[in-house]
Length: 193
Ligand SMILES: [Zn+2]
Image (cartoon, rainbow, N blue to C red):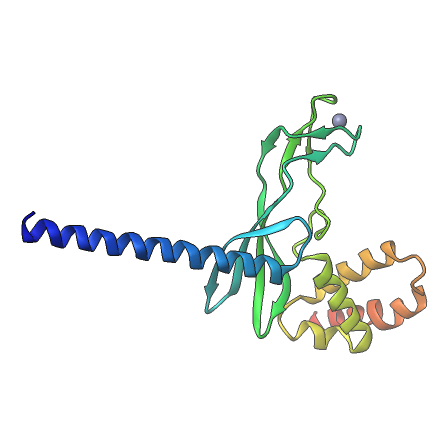
């Protein structure tokens, strides 16, 4: 074996070790991030940190099927992927964004596609349920403007969260909500004009 060939072999061997090590570290990162995210049936598949934006986690459902809301039949037949970005609870001072995939499955019984139900985010919302709950809690403890000023959620999003919450929680006293929430929004909107 010539010296050059020997060198090439050595370099390639080292490269293989480095690659294996990188994959190992990456797998551990993913496992830890999935544990930290702590959303049922959801795993993190990649992550990146953008200094200007925050932490972006690409996520995926661990489930391979979904139940048709129309007839209750389980379907494995993927129709389309619908990826979008939503906000989640911040991690320290970093904003956290989740790239989620609300898959469409095709029901073999109804012969129609349907969107899967995701437990942690309502349909057509740009934030997780737990971010909504946390923001509402903060609003009720403080006021909408101070919560919005933190730059995580906007006053419009808080308004939407409060409306959703009042539908979800019929026991929540409407008087309280009016006093602490909607009046405050009207005040802010009035000032904005
Ligand atoms: Zn169906």
